[in-house]
Every structure is written in C-alpha cells, then in structure tokens.
Length: 232
Image (cartoon, rainbow, N blue to C red):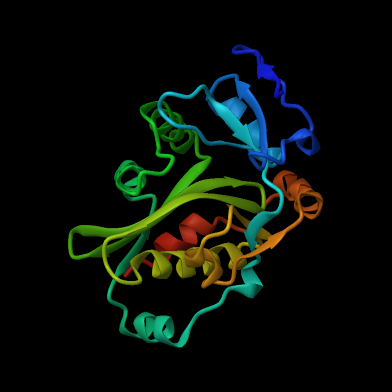
C-alpha cells in the first residue's frame, strides 16, 4: 500500500518507502501547486499519471541521470552541430514545447501530459522554475525539451523531435549552458535509448539523493540568459 496525500498539505514519505513493483511508486493524491511540485523535486520525487488516474508520485530506483562532463556526442551528431541546421533558443515558447511533448506522448500511447499537468507546468514556468529549450527551422518549432531548474540541478521532464537530431541538438546546448553555470546533474528519471545515446546512465536512488542538497546551492550564473545570449 502507498500513502494517500492530503490535498491541501501533502507531506511526502521518505523515498526509500517507494514500491519496487511498480518501480518507484511512492504516493498518491495531493496537488500540483507550484509549492508542492518544487518540494517534490527537491526530494527527488516527480508526478507521473494517466488521465483517469489520481495524481501519482514516483521515485524510481535506479535513477537515470546525465552528469554534464559525461555527455556523449556521436560523430554523426557532431557533424549535425557543425552544420548548425537549427536556431536554438530558451524560454521563447514554453507552452508550444510542452504541447508538442504532450502530443508525442499521446501518439506513443504512453503516459501523457494531462490538462492538469499542462496547467501545473505552465504555472511553474511563470514562477521561474520551469524552462524550455527550443530548436527552430525558420519559424517552425521542430524540437525541444523542458524541465525544472532548482539550485544546481535540472530535472528534465520531456523532449520532442520533428526533425532529425533536433531534440539532441537542443539537449547538447542545454548541457553546455548548465555546465557553464555550475550545475552538477541533470535528472532524466528513467532510461531510454535516446538518453543513453547522449551519455545518460543509471545510479542507485541512495546515490541520487546525495546530490539533492545541490538544490539549495545558487548556480554560478544564469544558464537561460547564457542560451539567450548565444541565440543564432
């Protein structure tokens, strides 16, 4: 059994109480307010649920992460980066990025971004916590990603691609900007071939928790301004 969180004042249990089947399920209920979400991410917890489900909270073990100095750029991706086929921006169109990610999840028949989740992350963006990186061809948004930045950790949520390598190029620019700003880790939640190809790896939940105090540390500079300064 998992605990049901109070809707007004949710109190998350320790993450080592998460189930092993399904992996990482920790709690249900609560709310998706900005304060609740920020508190959850600081503890290494994130929401993930289908339209007909209650709010479900997760802390999987192991945890997929990217350390900025371990990013892997393949020969083919290096060639794409040299060609500069995309204009990379930050926080230009967060709503369109999250909407594109939601459509991709619906098409893949996986867990998708519900209307409730959409509204919650728009609120996180408006409060300065959630950010997007976009890849453009002309005036068309062809790739991107979004996530939550707290202290010196970036908690990645989703990415999408409508053109070859567009999300990978956006991710490379993100990692470079985060590295320059002194971020220590990018949380990718769970493994995927796409993430593994970029240098992601899985670590134990106990090891992941050791990095969470970095949420209370100020970055050396603003990575989003750095991305905006480098817009092409």
